[in-house]
Amino acid sequence: MDTRRWVRGGCVGKGSFGMVSLALDRANGGIFAVKSVCLNSAPPHAIAALENEIRLLSSLDSPHVIAYLGEDVTEEPSRGGRCRNLHLEYLPHGTLADAAAARKLGEHEIRDYARSIALALQYLHFTAGVVHGDIKGRNVLLRSAPGMARLSDFGSARRLSDVSAKVRGSGTPLWMAPEVARGEAVTRASDVWSLGCTVIEMADRVRRPWGELRSRSNASAQLYQIGFGKDVPKFPVGLSWTARDFLDKCLKRDPTERWSCEQLLQHSFLSNSLNEAGPSPRSVLSFAESELEFGHEGDDYDDDDGGKCGYEDSLGAESSRARERIRQLAPMVRSNWTDEGWVSVRG
Image (cartoon, rainbow, N blue to C red; front, side):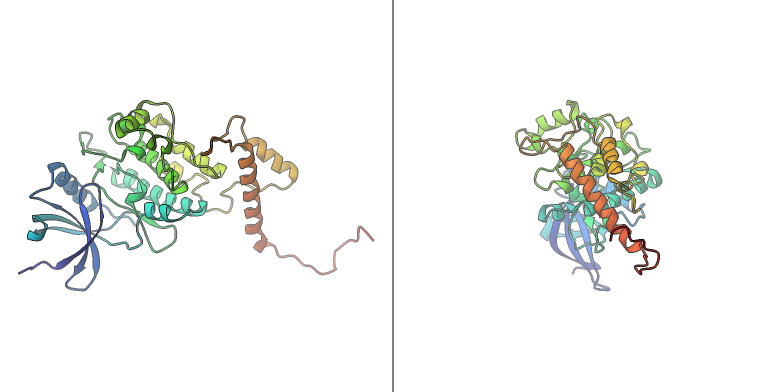
């Protein structure tokens, strides 16, 4: 007789080291998710990764991280014997990767999801003392509120204090920082690189990060190019100057030059303020000055067809931001449109 307090349902996905199923709580009818590995057949590194995830998640408490609900071991002959299980909250809205693949995300959505990930990383890095090690759209679960998400899949995570920790298969190649691709330790800075790659994934649902490598290289060649090359992933066409600058702060090949999550949360791309796109021009001359400030010579970006989108895209982005700023300011205007105080300047 099955004496478990829960009933396993269908598979809803696979993490780095285990399968995720729906589960029904017998006591209250609640739905949650269960991540499992079979102790009789799973490779040792998969079992170790799940145990590592259980230890870490049970110590975390953040609205930006998937919630830990418990763990157990069950005897399930239909699944090959004894199963080690991690109980998690269930978020039914899918992953960020699913959302990016289904439709083109607007820049405001990209900003909101990037902010959620950055807030999760700020908590992990500076409060919990943890690095995630596998930031990508597939490991970001969406919440019901627009732009809100929670970070999941901690199989590759480790404590910053545990410098000897080595979790096999840490990270996903096309989201890996160069130093991780070279076999060095995962750090706060490598999570930041992966955040930048996830922003590219959101903005370019077809190519994703390192799209130019995906089409003509095997996995080993990709890792070598990421680890020992001199390039960074191409920035998607159509992003604003502010978004490109944010990516530039994340995607420095030298990890010491990358911004921390605390710094990134102060970047204008993630800012909630009305001035997130910079001050709007007060005249044609000030608009021209802003173009001189932001449109540096040589800041052209290749598009997918080999064309350039430099000054023209920057000009369009600045114009768009100016119109948006005017739209935001319009409701604040309280003018008196009577004849009093007006001067006739033309008969």
